[in-house]
Amino acid sequence: MNASTIISMAGGLGLFLFGMKLMSVAIEKAAGAKLRRILEKLTTNRFTGMLVGIFFTAAIQSSSACTAMVVSFVNAGLMNLYQAAGVIFGANIGTTITSQLVSFNFSAVAPVILLAGVLVVMFSKKEQVKQVGEIIVGFGILFVGLETMKNAMGVLKENPYVVDTLSSLRNPFVATLIGTALTAVIQSSSVTVSIALLMAQQNLLEVHIILYIILGCNIGATATALLASLSGKKDAKRAALIHFWFNVIGTVVIYIILAISSLIAKNANMDMDPIVRGLMAISNNDNGRFVANAHTLIKVFQVIVLFPFLKPIVKLSCACVRGEDKKVGYRATGQLKFIGEKVVFNPATAIVEVVKELDRMASLASENLNRAMNALITLDQEDIDEVYEVEKNIDYLNHAITNYLVKINQTTLPIEDLKSIGALFHVVNDIERIGDHAENIADAAVMRKENGAQISKEAQHELGEMLDMVNTNIQYAIEMFVKGDETHTKDIIELERKIDAKEKELQQNHVERLAKGLCTPEAGMIFSDIVSGLERVGDHANNIAFAIMENNKRIEAEEEA
Image 1 (cartoon, rainbow, N blue to C red):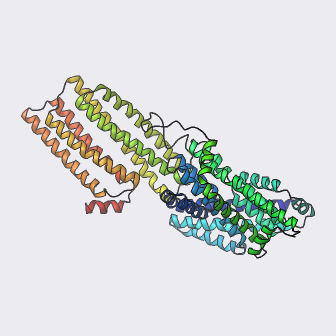
Image 2 (image 1 turned 180 degrees about the horizontal axis):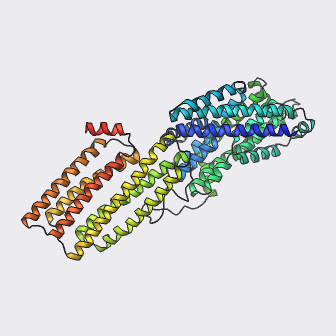
Image 3 (image 1 turned 180 degrees about the vertical axis):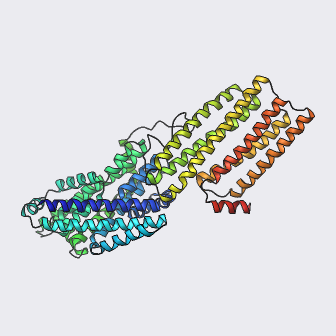
């Protein structure tokens, strides 16, 4: 085996890995947001979750990416462990699509596929079309790499030392360890199985021993999710362990079946194991198809056998990771709940986590506004102090979320999510400004305490009416922003108009009271400032509601209202 063969093998592997990564990332960028929504909405039970896992993993060509995303969903509280288990079971079937594709010889047309992808990337002006081009480029590079490795293995086949060494691999346990170790390092069972497939095609490895390498690959594939979960919460670790235990238990089951099959062959003096014979028959005696079909059937069989035991596997994972995380309440000071150190970062779920954190921040700001208005009337010092404390927390969340948005903006986010990044910066600012208005009202309460300014019952009633309108607008706005619920679109626009009209009405009433001597100048100044502040809070709520709505849709909604 000379240096050129080693270089060819390494180069082919590099191209294969790069092509698969490029294809997976491009698919996530092009359709990651849509796939995420499917993952969110269609995992209500174990069976649909499994089907989604199959589809999702087949689409992005990576069970590691799928399980890592599921772990991040569990970490953010978007999915429970039983839902996650269903998706993980399905992901184990979906990952076999890669070996099926590799078993069909696309290498002859790979250069044409690659050229087509490059042309799309170079000459297309639309970002989404370019992403499709990158998927095609990744697919082409993948098969160019496969062809390079295949040619190098053809040379290896002529080396007696290499052939003797590989043919001496007969110990199932050693083969499983090799599969586990290689996959854990490469972090892709699809790649390791594909390499084994090429070796089978070149007759470098016996097909029987490849069954054990495949089992090892399945266990090694759990390393990505396990590593990703280390920085996460306990449920994230449990989700990763569900993937691990599924593959370990499934491997033990297949080991027992293969051992029984080998024993039958030995006792019956068969020249070939019955399982191997059966797989060869359905694979047309093609070694490459044998490996691909074995990979798929092993996974399908494991899911069929273990699916009824999904709950016990979840409980086993919970038993391995005991206790509960220290819960971060939505009012917790100086702490992030959905993003930060104890969160499994995944580009496809990052925006979802930001929106949940913004929802929490908006609740704090809304509550603080009402607390401040109450303090203005009652002059309760505890309420005033609480307003200032909560405002510090809102300021902290403002800086922390903004910094996180800057960080994730530098990653490979899905295209749809990239479009909303700018809007999210504005939403953070709008929520922070609502908090500032609450602080201004608390300042007014302090001023009232110091100078004894009295707000008339009529003025108090007017402020209460305007606050109710603003509260409703904030509630509708947050629902529209967080849930994408456009039910109250027209209500928000109409409320905003009514708040503007109410501000003018109350300012006019205030002038009339001043003219009649029914209100002191000090109280009048406070009243006027608060009415103006509430009107601006309504504007901020309106901005939040329509932050991520396309501008033309917003204009249409305003015209209809």
